[in-house]
Image (tube, rainbow, N blue to C red; front, side, top):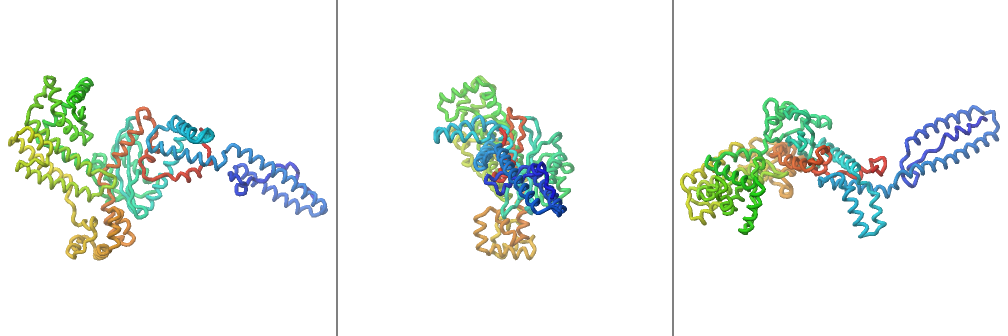
Length: 603
């Protein structure tokens, strides 16, 4: 019998089996190749054994003993080799904890918007000091196992952001409908960025999530914006046919009839609903005012700029306010793009009017305005009216605002404006606290021209708000309140519904269980919950509720972008950090850790 040569046997060795080894280490690729080669050689050896039937049984037995001996020897050698190779890894039980800690610290760094280098420059040294003091030097040394270098933190954030994106895309693919909220802005590095948020249905609830932040390489036209959004939709196997709404800031690139983003999307999905951000519309509506009031506003801004525009003036004014024991010591700048500053600037100026009178005396051409009673009454009125408009603006903001809430706020404000006009005719100024207090203390009365200017301004606000905000459609009232049990009311609200849908509405209205659910959940989530049982009604309701009424999320996103992309970090790729900081989804860290080829990443 011909035996297998010793050099061939020595080439073959059993592979390391990660299911049997107590350390649980993964097998190397070269071991997998060795398995294949061993099987081929063993098959050849079997063929040789079958062909040599003329050999004696004793020779066969001796050869078998020799082969087994060689296999056992090289099996031990292979195991020693595997253990030696495994020494380049940490023991999984220990290293997995260090890796998980590294990921969780990196997540905190991303959520707080800090520089990636803070892990090794502050977090790790601080953790070592705290551990050494509280638990001893031995425990402090364990902190050294946690990788928190700049590059490591960056890799951790990128992998976690990708995990969050995968979760989001998976949930989006299961949603029947979704709506988008888009806005474009330029960052500190003069790069144009397109931010997009999405609203979708998942597990019976409506969710708002950060979809993407992508650069616009050249132009910021409607075509360029559509191409960036479309690339994301196509790459992630989503469908425009499920899009039911797009909310924008009303810029030409977004809403242009021929080349705007909305028109391009509507060419694919004609039924998609376009929404102009209600916060932007409110600001457009309140811009108009009578000339005399506009002049007072402009002069007030000039006075503030004179004091705030020079460092010396600012310091002198602060000293004056302290000497007069004023509650505030500084005026506020007026910035056109910061809508809420108008009311705050005027309120602060009116509050510090006595201090401003003293400071401006013979220093500025407008110092005499601070002694003009009629001018001060107009300033007091503007302070009050813009403060209340600031309140309206703030009430329209929020991540969970619905179209019904917007309509209710605007309708209430218009009714108040009507009431205030009547009160001004009756010389009742209680709705304007600063004005009422000033008239009381100065013992002055408004002249006819000033009264008419106030009334004209209130009427103009009422009219402009009506132009920018349409009246609520009563045919959708059943969405906001489906529990209408009166027969006449049901017939009135269900005028645009089919007979089957009207019957389903009656079932909902008379269900005590659904009434409890309605009280416990938001409006959109209620209709998402009843969708399986009442798909027709739920579809109409959700398509009406899904579109974003504002671009509030994008405004928050741009504030985050500015915080991340600072002057010192103007070349950072903000996409992973943005996703972890803004998204409500949490990364699945155990899954991310398991996907690593080895537990310990290089520092």
